[in-house]
Every structure is written in C-alpha cells, then in structure tokens.
Length: 75
Image (tube, rainbow, N blue to C red; front, side, top):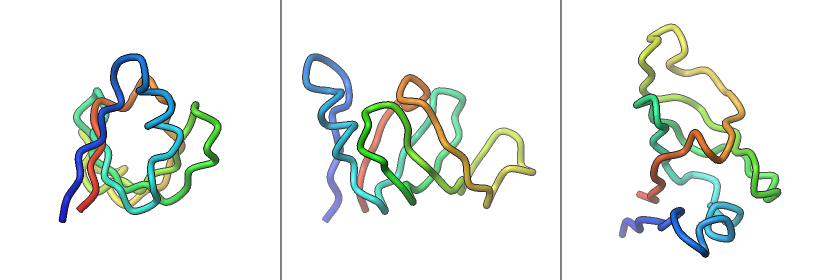
C-alpha cells in the first residue's frame, strides 16, 4: 500500500523529519530518488537517484536539503 506524505504547510517539517528509509522523493529539479538515510534533523535526507536530469547521477547517492524536496511517497 502506498502512502503520500504531506511535507508542506505547518506540520511539514515534522513529516519531513520522520520520512522513512525506502520512501521515494521527487525533487524540485525533477530528480527522483529513494531515501537511504534520514538523520532526522529536519534538514537533510540521503537519497539514491533512480531518475535525474543529469543522467550521469542516476544510481548516485547524495544528501539533499529539505527545500529541494517537492514530494514524498512510500511504495
């Protein structure tokens, strides 16, 4: 069962902080990645890209900042 996380609005930072590993995020640049680490600091997530505008980054791991994340959902 999939779940969409509301990371916008007043409670968005708490939802972002609690995003689980394995959830998929879509970034503002159109990249899509899977969360592989969440330090639960409300600022960063570590993701592995499955899609990226720069195809050389597909499969790469990177830390992304909260304002780069457009949406989040679990599979």
